[in-house]
Image 1 (cartoon, rainbow, N blue to C red):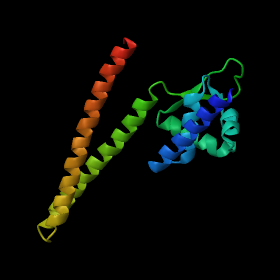
Image 2: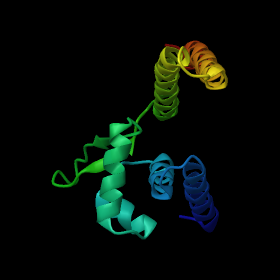
Image 3: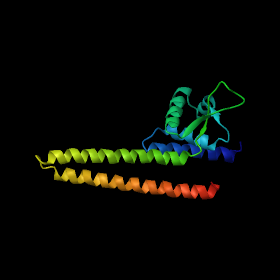
Image 4: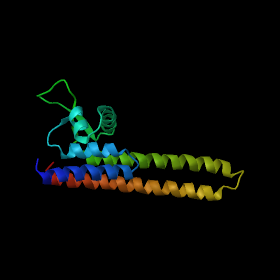
Length: 165
């Protein structure tokens, strides 16, 4: 690997780590994702840990979480059928977006539940301000849901045209 390629790999890993951390996620998650995005072939747990300078335990836990969120998947290797190999999911970015949509939908449900509770108590207490704030929360997240769904529809159209699907 040339020094220019090595610099790009290191920067990609560093930037993804920072991005994941800024979203309140584990920095190592970003490092693993970036490494697998960069890797032309699937990598074993041992290779991932070695390339990131980490022990296998934390890397294994991160890989499990990334698999649960459909960002990476196990892959088969003809050279070594005893080790697990990993690669990014083909729809990694769409899956990450869908994971965010699920968080927004959860916030919408939470806002609706809170609004109902505040409404039932408000008859006895003066909770108008809280009711207004929770109502705004619900409207905000419902609108976000709508825009996320519209984006996914548009993305599927763009992707289909680009890939000829």
